[in-house]
Amino acid sequence: MPPSAGRAARVTRPRTLAIAAAAIAALALTACGGPSYEPRVVAGTSVAVAWEGELTSANAASSTGATAGNRDLAALTRGAFTTLDNDGELREDPSFGTVTIASESPFTVRYDLAEGVRWSDGVPVDAADLMLAWAATSNALSTPDLDVSALRGTDGALDLPEDAVWFDVADSGGLIHSTGATPDDWQRSIDVELSQPIPDWQQALPVAVPAHVLAQRVLGIADPMEAKQAVLDAIDRADPLVLHRLSAAWSSEFVVDPLALESDLLVSSGAYRVDTIQNGRVDLVANTSYVGAQSAAIERLALRPVADDAAALQALAAGEVDVATVEPTEESRTVIRDLERDDASLLLAGDGTRWELALRADRAPLQSVEARTSFLRSFDQRRATEAALGERVQDTTATDSILFRSGTRIYEYALEDAGFSDAFGGADAEAAAALRDSMAIAAGTELCVLHDRASGFSTAYVEAMREQAAEAGWAVRDCGVDDLRAGLAGEDWHAVLRQVTVPEGVGEIDERWRDGGITAASSAERNAMIDEALATADRDALEETLLELETSLVADALVLPIIEPSPTTVSASQVQGVVPRPRSASLTWNAWEWAIETATAPAPAP
Image (cartoon, rainbow, N blue to C red):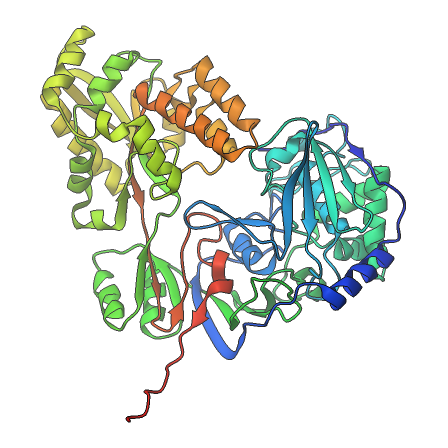
């Protein structure tokens, strides 16, 4: 969700306090009685991962830096209050800090860092870093009425006027509703005040940029603690001149040049830190300054660039990489089978996308729920998938939910509550024809199904639909196009078969389903559900609202979820703990949990 320019914000500090003194006191407490963590790293261990990314920025929270490759690195080099795991559940890391609701009215969230958390250069992670993260993510101190789109160049970067303030953040999330922030006296926590409850309050504050590094580079302050204090002062006073420089640099200063690495840009608060970059390969080493429960067990981690899946498999077979995620093909199955026979681990996991068929509710003959129900009951989604994919169906996961990813806890609830599989879990040509007749829709009525003709799956699936739906009196026409985006702008299609991302969070559900989304089935009731979800902080209440939304969408017969592509992650036999998750940092998100299985000598004979 893009932030809004020019919202008034309040920044309060209970009293002036020297940040250096607070940091020293906090470190002293840690030394005397703070938590201690045993190092886990095993000297000499290493793992190489096949990687199609690229490290271009050390700030993965910025618009230009929020690439897949940069997010892979951020997962390795940034501590976080919480992380989404492979099951879609939120994992808390109290060794980094805690997030709590400090007040219900006004809704206020406290982000409280654990004792001893520090950057890899030894500088504490503290309230200056949190306040910078708040200012950047919320853009609460931005210049009023700033037309950001007009300032963006063809390369995506911003060219800010000298008197303008704008942190070019990729996603503000719920912090778009923030009205102010207050650091505590000990400079270890901040209270963020919001105009309403938000569903993502536990995830809303990514500490992407070290405040001391930013101020050192921008303001020329050598001492890191003084640099932090300068950031706090600029935010406290809402100083437009200093904030202009900080915001511009936050957005663009953290570019990584492999030929001229700058160590200050690569400081880490996570389990690993970047060591070298050469020919696209990023070598990381365990961060010996890391303090927390998520320390690395493997000493060195290499992200090795590969051109494609074939190259990744070749590197696996040759022992050049230990972990890779690939989409199996007829040609590669033999290689994967041989790797499995050599005790490699294979894991299938959804990639965070889904194929679905969305019906257009604002165009005859699918304007009524009865007509849409008739069409969706005229063919069997599983049979159509098997016809389209053949043996490759084993590389996918069937799905029966519109809002939720298969295999998650809430997905199982959705199957029970919304009952999609009961409503549309198989073909019933006789019932479908009767429904069509009841709406006075003639047998042989044509439905234009839009899709990307370059996709072998969608082309074959439309053909399978055509053959089955004909029995119920529907004439499916293949409306494949070369440019799906341009095709969707047309007026002559009735349904679209396309690959989309599975929504992750209420913001994405809002973008997809507000006013009916692509189906144009506007519903004031569903809009109200989305509004309620966007202003809900209680997880149980949020899930209930989203399940009601799912049930409403199923009842209106608007979309048919089909399959989730599920690539195969191959791990060498000695590498333990690799668990892929969908979307961002799909492999690196839990690299700190990975370990090398060492051979043990057999017990001596008695």
